[in-house]
Image 1 (cartoon, one colour):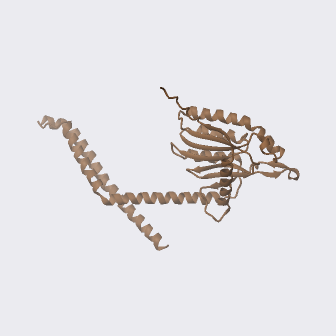
Image 2 (cartoon, one colour):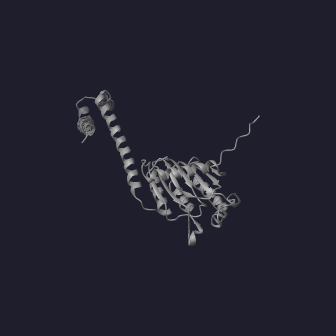
Image 3 (cartoon, rainbow, N blue to C red):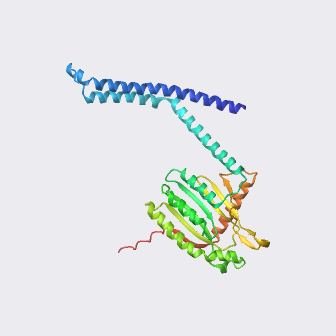
Length: 311
C-alpha cells in the first residue's frame, strides 16, 4: 500500500472515530433535553398544587435555553466543521470512483444490443434522475418509423422530469436532396412526412399532459445525407450512448440496411486507449456536422407570439 493510501486510510479511521464520538455526545444532550421536557410537563399539576406557578411560558423558556446551549456548542465546534468538510470530500471521491467504475464495466462488454435494449437502458437511467432533471439527449435517427414508438412511451412515462432538451435529426423528406442514395433509403424518406406529423402531435400531448410548459424543449431537423450511423445519446447528466452503423447487406450486398440489432453501447466518458472513446467521437462528429448543415423541422413548445404594443 502506498504512503498516500495509508494516509487516506488513517484519515478515514480518524474521521469515523470522531463522528462516532460526536454522535454519542450530542445524542446524549438531545436525550437529556427530551427527558427534562417530559419531566417538567408531567409535574406541572403537582407544582401548581404546592403553590408554585409554572406555566407554559416557563416550560418554553427551559426548552429554548437547552436548545440554545446545544446549538452554541455545535456552532462553536471547529472540529465538527472540519469533519463536515471531510464527509463532503469522501462522498465526492466515492461518486467519482463510482462513475469511473461504471464506465469501465459498461464499456468492457463487447456484446451488441437491440433497439429495445437501448431504450430500456435509457428508461432505467431516466428513472434514477431526481426532479426536475435537466437532461440533454441527441438523437441521430433514420425515419423514426420504429424508434419513435419506444421514445414516445419513454418520454411520456417520466413526468417527474421537467427540464429535457431533446434534439432529433431525421432523414430528409425530400428524396431529390439525396440523389445518390439507393432505392431503399429513398423509400425511408417517403415515410418521413407522416412521422414528422406524428412526432409533433405526440410531443405536444406529452407537454400538455405534464402540466409543465417547460417540461421539454424538442427540436427536429432534417439532414440531407445518406445515413451512415444512427443512435441515441444522453449527453448529461448520465452520459450514455447506443449507436449502430448502416451497412450493405443481402444478396451480393445490394441492399442498404440499418443494422438492427447491432447497437454498440458506450457508457460514461470512457478513457482513451480503447474503442469506446473513438466510437463516441464518431457519433459526436456526425451529429454536430449534420445538425449544423440540416434543414429546419420544428421546435416545441412553440415560442410565444410577441404582443402588439398598445398605444
